[in-house]
Amino acid sequence: MNNKCDLVCCKKLDSLKKRNHSQVFISAENQNEYEELRTSINEVLFKGVFQGWVSIENSKGNIRSLLFDLGCVKEEAVSPNGTMFANITIGNDELDKFINLKGFEVCDDKDILFENTNT
Image (spheres, one colour):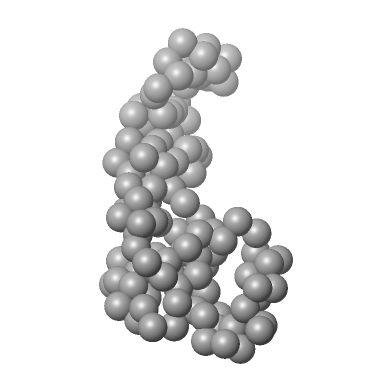
Protein backbone atom coordinates (compact mmCIF):
# COMPACT_ATOMS: atom_id res chain seq x y z
CA MET A 1 0.00 0.00 0.00
CA ASN A 2 1.21 3.46 -0.83
CA ASN A 3 -0.11 6.50 1.01
CA LYS A 4 0.22 10.23 0.33
CA CYS A 5 -0.56 9.77 -3.35
CA ASP A 6 -2.13 13.21 -3.39
CA LEU A 7 1.45 14.55 -3.29
CA VAL A 8 2.43 12.81 -6.54
CA CYS A 9 1.59 14.29 -9.93
CA CYS A 10 -1.05 12.40 -11.95
CA LYS A 11 1.31 11.26 -14.73
CA LYS A 12 3.83 9.82 -12.29
CA LEU A 13 1.08 8.14 -10.28
CA ASP A 14 -0.36 6.55 -13.44
CA SER A 15 3.09 5.26 -14.33
CA LEU A 16 3.57 3.79 -10.85
CA LYS A 17 0.18 2.06 -11.01
CA LYS A 18 1.01 0.49 -14.38
CA ARG A 19 4.30 -0.90 -13.10
CA ASN A 20 2.98 -2.07 -9.72
CA HIS A 21 -0.31 -3.88 -10.38
CA SER A 22 -0.36 -5.52 -6.96
CA GLN A 23 0.07 -2.22 -5.12
CA VAL A 24 -2.72 0.04 -3.89
CA PHE A 25 -2.25 3.79 -4.02
CA ILE A 26 -4.32 5.89 -1.60
CA SER A 27 -4.46 9.32 -0.07
CA ALA A 28 -5.57 9.65 3.53
CA GLU A 29 -5.77 13.40 2.91
CA ASN A 30 -8.60 13.17 0.39
CA GLN A 31 -9.56 9.49 0.82
CA ASN A 32 -9.05 8.62 -2.83
CA GLU A 33 -8.97 4.93 -3.73
CA TYR A 34 -10.34 3.62 -0.40
CA GLU A 35 -12.65 1.24 -2.26
CA GLU A 36 -9.64 -0.20 -4.12
CA LEU A 37 -7.92 -0.72 -0.76
CA ARG A 38 -10.99 -2.50 0.67
CA THR A 39 -11.17 -4.72 -2.40
CA SER A 40 -7.48 -5.58 -2.15
CA ILE A 41 -7.78 -6.44 1.55
CA ASN A 42 -10.81 -8.64 0.88
CA GLU A 43 -9.00 -10.46 -1.92
CA VAL A 44 -5.95 -11.17 0.22
CA LEU A 45 -7.67 -12.00 3.51
CA PHE A 46 -10.96 -13.55 2.43
CA LYS A 47 -10.40 -14.85 -1.13
CA GLY A 48 -12.76 -12.12 -2.31
CA VAL A 49 -16.23 -11.26 -1.13
CA PHE A 50 -19.60 -12.72 -2.04
CA GLN A 51 -22.52 -10.31 -2.14
CA GLY A 52 -25.90 -11.82 -2.89
CA TRP A 53 -28.91 -13.79 -1.75
CA VAL A 54 -28.96 -17.16 -0.02
CA SER A 55 -31.87 -19.35 1.04
CA ILE A 56 -32.09 -21.05 4.40
CA GLU A 57 -34.66 -23.74 5.19
CA ASN A 58 -37.03 -22.64 7.94
CA SER A 59 -35.82 -25.45 10.21
CA LYS A 60 -32.22 -24.16 10.01
CA GLY A 61 -32.40 -21.18 12.36
CA ASN A 62 -28.91 -22.03 13.58
CA ILE A 63 -27.50 -21.16 10.14
CA ARG A 64 -29.39 -17.86 10.15
CA SER A 65 -28.04 -17.14 13.62
CA LEU A 66 -24.46 -17.82 12.51
CA LEU A 67 -24.83 -15.42 9.58
CA PHE A 68 -26.11 -12.71 11.92
CA ASP A 69 -23.28 -13.41 14.38
CA LEU A 70 -20.81 -12.83 11.54
CA GLY A 71 -22.51 -9.50 10.83
CA CYS A 72 -22.94 -10.29 7.15
CA VAL A 73 -26.76 -10.11 6.79
CA LYS A 74 -27.82 -6.90 5.05
CA GLU A 75 -31.47 -7.76 4.45
CA GLU A 76 -33.77 -10.71 4.91
CA ALA A 77 -37.14 -11.94 3.70
CA VAL A 78 -39.37 -14.94 4.31
CA SER A 79 -41.41 -16.76 1.67
CA PRO A 80 -45.03 -17.83 2.28
CA ASN A 81 -43.85 -21.39 3.04
CA GLY A 82 -41.30 -20.15 5.61
CA THR A 83 -38.09 -20.38 3.61
CA MET A 84 -35.76 -17.66 4.82
CA PHE A 85 -33.76 -15.55 2.38
CA ALA A 86 -30.84 -13.37 3.34
CA ASN A 87 -28.93 -10.81 1.34
CA ILE A 88 -25.39 -11.22 2.65
CA THR A 89 -21.91 -9.84 2.21
CA ILE A 90 -19.40 -12.44 3.30
CA GLY A 91 -15.83 -13.45 2.54
CA ASN A 92 -15.64 -16.36 0.12
CA ASP A 93 -13.63 -18.35 2.64
CA GLU A 94 -16.47 -18.03 5.16
CA LEU A 95 -19.11 -18.74 2.50
CA ASP A 96 -17.29 -21.99 1.69
CA LYS A 97 -18.05 -23.16 5.24
CA PHE A 98 -21.80 -22.73 4.63
CA ILE A 99 -22.03 -24.08 1.07
CA ASN A 100 -22.10 -27.75 2.07
CA LEU A 101 -24.55 -27.30 4.94
CA LYS A 102 -27.91 -28.95 4.39
CA GLY A 103 -30.62 -26.31 4.14
CA PHE A 104 -28.33 -23.54 2.86
CA GLU A 105 -28.20 -22.54 -0.79
CA VAL A 106 -26.85 -19.63 -2.81
CA CYS A 107 -29.55 -18.02 -4.98
CA ASP A 108 -28.30 -17.25 -8.46
CA ASP A 109 -30.93 -14.68 -9.33
CA LYS A 110 -32.80 -12.37 -6.94
CA ASP A 111 -35.83 -12.38 -9.28
CA ILE A 112 -36.45 -16.10 -8.63
CA LEU A 113 -36.09 -15.99 -4.86
CA PHE A 114 -39.76 -16.68 -4.20
CA GLU A 115 -40.58 -18.36 -7.52
CA ASN A 116 -39.99 -21.94 -6.35
CA THR A 117 -41.30 -21.51 -2.79
CA ASN A 118 -44.90 -20.42 -3.35
CA THR A 119 -46.22 -23.98 -3.39
